[in-house]
Length: 354
Length: 261
Image (tube, rainbow over all chains, first blue to last red; front, side, top):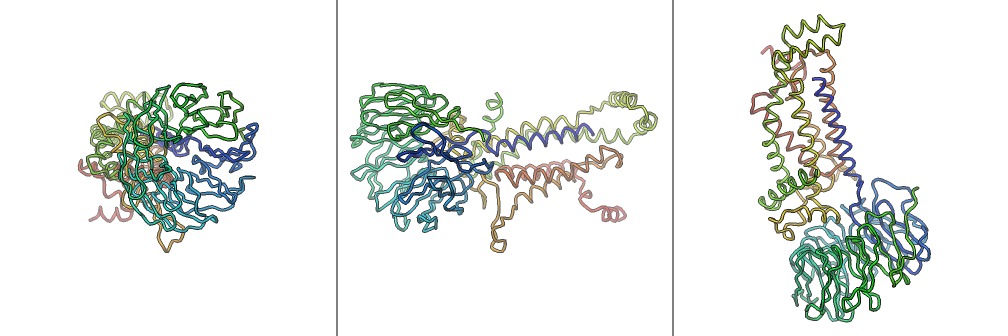
């Protein structure tokens, strides 16, 4: 009997430690989100939001100053025209920070789940998607104006043409809402969850990627399908559009260039490892990261220009900041690495332990 | 190895049940728990049998004589006890071994539930790679994590107007209550109420409901659904085997009155 109870107590303690470990997130649950202004990069990564100097990669401030087990951040922060830095946390709170020093301006705590996607700031409103299936529209003081309910979690920022906002959801749908009132204008069912933001073309098309492995082109008035391009795997990231070409990668590691008008494939390459992040187009270079930790630069014909091994896994998009390209791998010592357009590393930022 | 042998198969069984029963993940957890209970029934039955054999042995004259005779010589007492175990064919670990075997199942089950819920991008990526090819993954994922009033990937609270900002943790209360009832019904009365093992038994009866209640309060409510389903299934299992001692739920004074009648 005594042995049995000892085993039970030890088992209960082990269970307690095990479950605690799972809940406090010993491993990251997403990849870092990055935003930049003229001089600073802002990286939301696990316990903190960091402000890092673009010049030399030094830390300017971090929020919160001391890690709090209940707080973690992965959604890319967004700067507002009136000088706020909006970032959502996994603690269900949307924060407005002062980008100069990381002090909190206001908090919006009505979200009932994690803030996984970034916000869209337009029309003097903050459109904030939450994993509780709700898109919250706030004014710039953080006061709720209206909300819209989808049928599944919202993990990506909406986009806007000024009149409407277009929102992808994990419920396999894309929604068009009136930008002022949040009233639904149309909704369109697609072949899988929409994990990243739709992309607006200049002639009223909407490009949407799905977990079902398709890239859809929809017209924006009614959501009618114009064309569809199918890949053999799933697509996570938003496509990039440049000179009527669409660039995107899939989870099988294929990287595609399509004609944006008809969806015809121009070329595809398969560098090394799944491609989840949105590509970045800088001049004639198209840059993207791979799960194998490589930052790849190809030209508009798909020819490899350079490949730089960053380390870790590159799930997020490369971001342009000044003359630099920033990437934030997961499972890597450095949180942020900066490269120039020739692929030479300029600096790497590893947060100091405090 | 752990993921391949335990977590991934359990997750796929969970997904299979989810798919069959109309995309209701709460129901899938309940049915999955019942399935696990059914599969581990032989272990539970053996545990009860061993526990009873042990209890009967501890009430026997031989056992009590040994206790008295060697009360001042612990080593000799242990030797004689082992002899008696052998003589009566009782395995001293027989009642705890099934519990030990079930601990990895609980670990695996929790990991499976959390993996299947995939409430963050990296979890969804991991889940995608864990799903067997028989499933239409894009159509199946992500799972619907809503069940009744709960989001199964979040700790549960009920917000009532008269409670203001305080959320009532109803599931945590039910978890603690069902754990208490199960332990009271299934724990046999000790042969020697004053000894150390009886004391530990009483402690466990109090400690476990609080511990599991705390888990339910803190962790994803999908886990609470598992605890409640498992407790209720355990109670029914014991009752069907005729082993549940319903009188043990009554306070001592009422128990006495019940006996007199």
